[in-house]
Every structure is written in C-alpha cells, then in structure tokens.
Image (cartoon, rainbow, N blue to C red; front, side):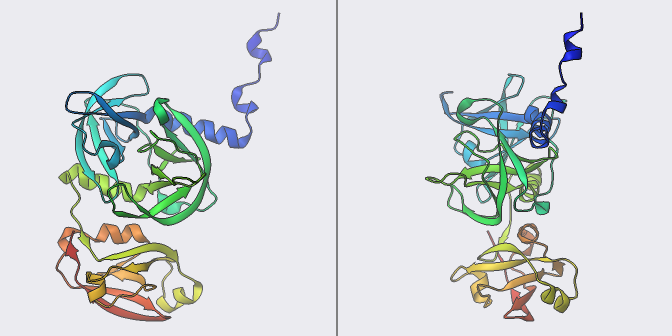
Length: 317
C-alpha cells in the first residue's frame, strides 16, 4: 500500500504564487500579533484592539486611541497567554503607543521601510477584529502620502491608504508586505466607504516609538503646515543638482503659525531644512525636534519654478 503522504501534494506547491506570498507573510508575522484589551478602574473591559510585538523582550506597538484613557491594559499573545501590560508612552499626534509585557524570548515581527512602498503593491493586514484572533485580509496599497485626522483631532501625515479590509479591533495591528515585514500600523477605515483603510507608515512609527521608549513622550517643534511627500521631475532635479527625487510639498499653511509669519505658501516645495536634505515628510518630522524650537532655521524652497531660501522659527509643540 502506498503511504498517504506520498500521494498528497505538498501545500506549498499546491498554492498559486499570490496565495503562497500571503500565507508565508502571515506565517512570519502572525505569531507576533497580539490582542490589546483595555480595562476601566474596576477591571471591567472597555475596549479592544490589536498590536504587534517588535522586540523579543515584550515591547508592543499599538494605536494611541486603543489605549487612550485606559487604567489597565492586557495583552493576549498568539499562544493564548494573557499578560498585564504597562504603558511605556503614547503620542496622540501620530496615534501611536508603546506597551510592554513581562516576558522574554518572544516571537517578534521584522520591520520594513514604508518609504520603499509603491502604489499597487500587495499588502496584508493582520489583527483581532471583533475578537477573532489572528485574522488576515489582503489588498493593495491604494495611495501614499495621505493626511488623516486622528481620533484626537490631530492631522497625521504620510499615511498609507489600502483596500485591505479592516474592522473594529484591527486598530494597532500590522500592515505587512509580501516579504513578511511590517510596513505600517493599521489605524482607521473610512466610515461609510468600502475598501478605504489607512495605516501609519512604519518609518514614522519607528521614529515615534524610539522617542517613546527613551523619554515616555514625543517632544517636537511645529511649523504650522500640512504637507505631503512628492516626487520631483527631471527638470527640478537638474536645477537642484541632486539625485534624490523626493521632497515635501506644502498643502496648507495654518493662519498665525510660524509658517504663515515666515511667508510660506501652499504649493511651496521644501527640499532642504536646516542643512539637511528632505527625502519626504518623514524626514521633516524627524527634524522637527524640540531642540529646533525658537531657532531661526534656513529652508530651501522651490516656488513657482525658482529655488529660494526662507527662514522660519519653529515653536515647541
């Protein structure tokens, strides 16, 4: 009699390439995805979301709105263990928070780079929607550089738009590329719409998380603009004599802000800030530290096809 194993075709060879990529990415990141439950002062559940372990010693990224106002938090691992979590820090402006649980040698997810994403790229979202553990959905990157208003009312910039379906409870879970790397933190879905969901780019998340782990909060300075990453055309690249084809374009100037007082305009393209080349909005966020508040900063700007230099004095936010 022939052994059954010899008759059965291996699972990997029976999958089409798309399914194989999804399955392998899920296998790599899924074990690091956790449920995040928040409790009131009496220990009663008052909400839930998702998160992702990114270090082996128990650090978890989630959304700030998931843990906002929580007296206690509990993290449920993929193996079923439920552990009390302490709040390391939270940042309402980017809707990100870091929790920590007391455990070692944990499966944790590898982090990618959201700056490398392209529209049309395949992605998967993993989370615990409506309490269903380790649920995966798939889609594509629909747009990059979106601006999203968070639950706290702040504008979050450089947001990824995807059509990978999200449901209540997905918030804080990872958006994953087809190489099994976290490239975003799922944060919201457009109410009343289908296939319009948003994730915070992992480049922004890494910068915020590092500051939360170091200081417990994010200290920054503010210009008073809404902006997005754009690609420069060849003519502008030749004018600037540079190879980096990304910069930052202002879409809105807030009245009575440092940018308004410095005569910045909607449509201005920022290419250098305080001597640093801007390769996208994440670079600008990284440079807007508290140390730059109340200092005059030189900014190279393309305005109506001409390169000029402006000076701005950021204020502490």
